[in-house]
Length: 526
Image (cartoon, rainbow, N blue to C red; front, side):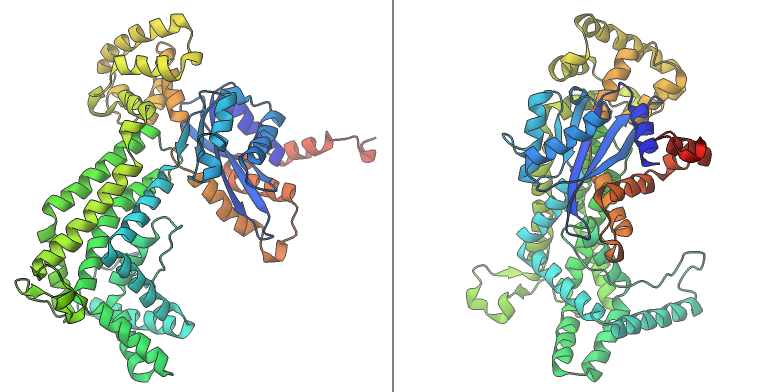
């Protein structure tokens, strides 16, 4: 069955250009497994990301990985020269300019452009920014401390949910909550993880949602804890949670992480294209800048209301702020509470966030991606730039167009811009992935085949390694502690069928029986 799935994927690709997306992880037996995902545009103009194989590698050096990848590609008659993109994380064995995996493939195929996973870049930016600002770094340490206290035992977890359940029942009785399917679910506190995308935002939201219940349980531990250590830890956690500065940072990070979480979720879509991803990065920066310029008063109002509802002391913002718990002699400048909260915390945190995002998503340093935005059909092709598209082809894809096609491309684009106005299916679209599908659907692909070719090449460029990450999540389901002796080939076959189940479901039982029968002559058939 897995062989039939791979042949189906191979037929989908045909003679098209494709991209390789690679990542590695250890399985239950501590064997290093490499996931190979192929990204391409199918005959209907839709982006596809297919898990093609899982290969065991003895080490993760770039040479070993390249040899394994080339072995799989050659086995299925996929030419390395047709690779038009490489998607990896930022590890040195992958992105190294001289001996990294991307450099080795570039030697064989100069147009196999490497794109560092956008989702990894975003996560690195968020983690780096949170560690740069001391108070924010301390906040996440405190948040982890609180979550660990509450989730360290099943007894506390049950108490937390019981208190939350009682709180919801009371709010429903006084008509403070809306009832309905899926509403008012009883959750729990979630831990923060540097390697888990969106975990910071989820942890913050869970604490805000469970704030009352968490405080009630902490007070119970303070009064009735089984040991002095537990009572002291609960007291420290309660004091942290009832401080104005902690509540301010809690809501501030909810605002910032809420903006970046939308980008994070979008980057993990299989159908995401590089141009739209860059547009999402740009709008994320703009929203964070807007929060910096005009979001302080709104945030302060939200925090003040929250503190009033939970009887948390609110300091006088005009009073002098003394840091280091009253040791004023260590403080160089005499500032007010308002200056400390607005400048030292709010503005500094957002500035660091913007600085990291600009550093890790610098468009000026990636000419290929900058020129690719010229294909964006948003706002009725407002930024559609014929000159830049021609430069894109001439500079980055010269081998995919002959000399005459490069000349014809400009005239074809001019005809397209005039023609698109009279076609609603082509005019009212916002991404190049939608444009690719619309060209095929309307039959315009025959008239504008050169434009279609350019679009397909850009859509082939990878956005993130989320598909490989998802395959490793599936690996934990298939190869468990009780099935830890599963052979590598059997594991790969199971994973291909499990992940690409929509393909496997199209095969009939008779076709699988015939496939098995054709492998060799059976005595029963004689």
